[in-house]
Each structure stands twice: as C-alpha cells, then as structure tokens.
Amino acid sequence: MSTDAFLARFGAPGASQPDPVAAAQSAMRNALPRRFYGKAAVLERDGLFHVALDGKTARTPARNPLAVTSRPAADALAAEWQAQQEKIDPARMPLTRLVNSALDGVIDQQEAVRAEIVRYAGSDALCYRAAEPDTLVERQDAIWNPIIAGVEAAIGARFVLAEGVMFAAQPAGTLEAVAARVTTIPAPLALAGAHNVMTLTGSTILTLALADGQLDPDAVWNAAHLDEDYQIAIWGQDEDAAERRIIRRQEFDAAALLLLQG
Image (tube, rainbow, N blue to C red; front, side, top):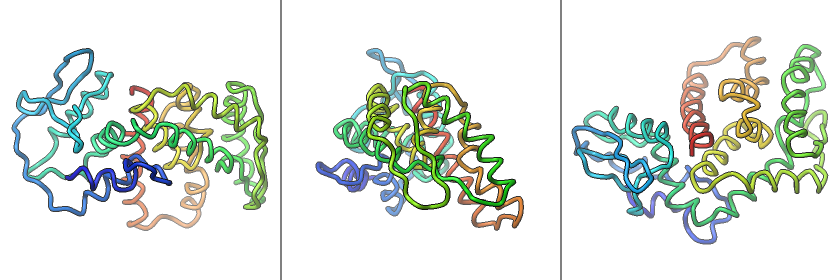
C-alpha cells in the first residue's frame, strides 16, 4: 500500500474535499500483500501504544509509527492485524485504514477537516423532516428532537428545522457554536473518527451527541438510519443493500472507537 495511494484524496496539500478514509480505500485496488508476520500485539513505548508485528513496531504508509494514545484503540488495531489471513486485506481493516489516514493526512489538515464537520451542520440530516406519513413524522420527532435538544444545550445555540428537502440555512451563531465545539475535538485521531462518523451518518449533530456522551454508538447508528429502517420495515431490504450496510457499520464502529478513544 503506497503512501501516494493513501494520501491521493486527503493527505495531499491543498486537497479541497478532506476525507480521512477515502484515500486509504483507493489502495484496496492494489494487489494484496502476503501476510509477513506471525503475531500482532501491542507495545507500550514513549507514552504511546504501538502495533507490534512479531515484536517490531508497525508503521503507516508514510512511515509514521502506527501508534495511538489509547490502549483499547491499540488492542482493536492489533486484533485487525491478527485477524488477517494469508494476505493482508485493507478492506477488512477499517480501524487501521482510519488511523493511517489520520496520522498521514489529517494531522496536517486539521482545520480543513474541522471546517468540513461544521459545513455539514449547515445541512444536517436531523434538521430535515418528513411531511408524511404521520408514523414517520412521529418517529422522527420522538427520536431526533431530544438529540437536537441535547446538542443545543451543550453548545448554547438553536438549530432550524425544515420540512421536506428545501434548504433551510442555519443561523450564523449556531454554526459558530458548532465550530467552537469542534475545535475541542483532539487531533488527529479523534478528529478523523469524528469526520467519518459525520460522513457515515450525514449528521454533525449525531457526531457531537456521540462525542459528548449523550448517545452511545448503537443509538447514534439507529438514529442515523431511522428513515432507512422505516422503509425496510415496509418494503424489506435486498441482499446487496444489507451487505453494504454491514460494511458501513464496520466503518462506523471503527470511527466511533477512534472518536471516543483517540
């Protein structure tokens, strides 16, 4: 997995659409390398928890140490490496890909990533409500309204809600309050996790609710998929869509872990 492949869409200087995992995903098209180690473990050194492969500390594609500040995150990283079979498949290593992109890309583009999270708040999925049917409207109100209220209380600002898909601008003061909160998310690891939680849920509000401990990851995931689950209950879900959702959930779990433990 080359450094250029990992950083092509995110880590390159001046990138206009920061996405801390998209660059890593492009590397999946390359031929998979053979597994070259027997055991993956965690090694504590210099205040960090390193992934060690047969006792040797691993590195990112840009040759930075593959190391985090949290033991639970390090254990999860090592478990991904240990679970690899004959070949190393990045598609089955969402946390490793995210940590790689955080250490190789997000660390140098923190302000761009923070700005992207704030931009999402301007058209947050939770602020756009169905007009019908009544059962969906009631479900959105019951699940989403308390979440929005909790985030509003935390940041000291109010969000504007809209019906349908017509754009409703958020007050400048609200976006400034979101920006102030986003500034406190540690970089690069937790920030990379926050960015991916946001993109996978379509919601900065849900991201902040998770970061503040208002909701746990399961509750965030369920809230983000409220509309989708409503449609599935009526029409069912095809096999391909179900598989894509499983993959997205794995990406989400990795991002949530990094946001909370990074």
